[in-house]
Length: 308
Image (tube, rainbow, N blue to C red):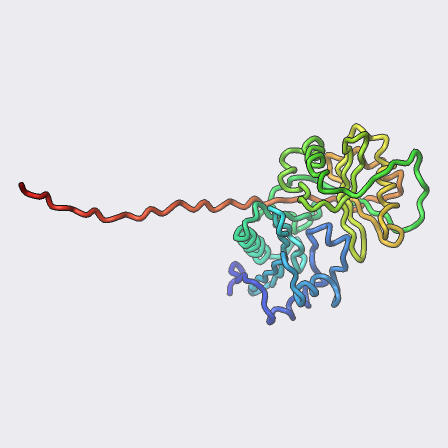
């Protein structure tokens, strides 16, 4: 098999040794999972999801002369977009990118078969993988930065604000908030599903903030959607949320801030969050297959004319 050829397929048991070898050198492209789960090592999510498959996770392997690449994406039942979980191993700038390009193409095809509209990945800017994804047809939809805070005791902020868990009847107002505060192109790929897992700030009957929350064994991950008109209340909103979450005193908290939300950063600095690496949220659109109706020709039956 030449360096420009590769075979990509769904994994099977014979691929387990390969996955064990590359699992410690994976690039996570899903911040939610990376910040809430233990992804590496013998008991990490990469191997666990292979040995104990979960619904909605799809794992592929590309075998070429060198290197061999494993990739996984996730597609939830209520989501229209697939999200890359990881690619392994992490490419280096001088690597031949053939295997990774084959893998990204295969993941896109598989996601399309599952009726996904797009394939999404979150990758560090300036990395070799960022360039490979651009070559593969991914476009940058947003720039973002992760902000971290380790567990501990932090001072209370005054005046206090009060948040509550989101309920199903909040969905319409949350969608309206997102439409008001998120750029239109980005709304197509980040809108929360109908199953709300976050908290809302309800001010005089109007939802002014929704904070999507994922709590895992190893961390808490938050994506905020906040109306800029309540800038002065933003530090108290984030503080109240982190204090309200049951495990916030024991787990690190990560907040994802996208470039259009730069105004939130001073609030995070006041709350002793620290900035992490800058990333790009990259999207590859999946063309829908339109099946043309097939018309079946019918034979004409000639009926002889009757003579008088």
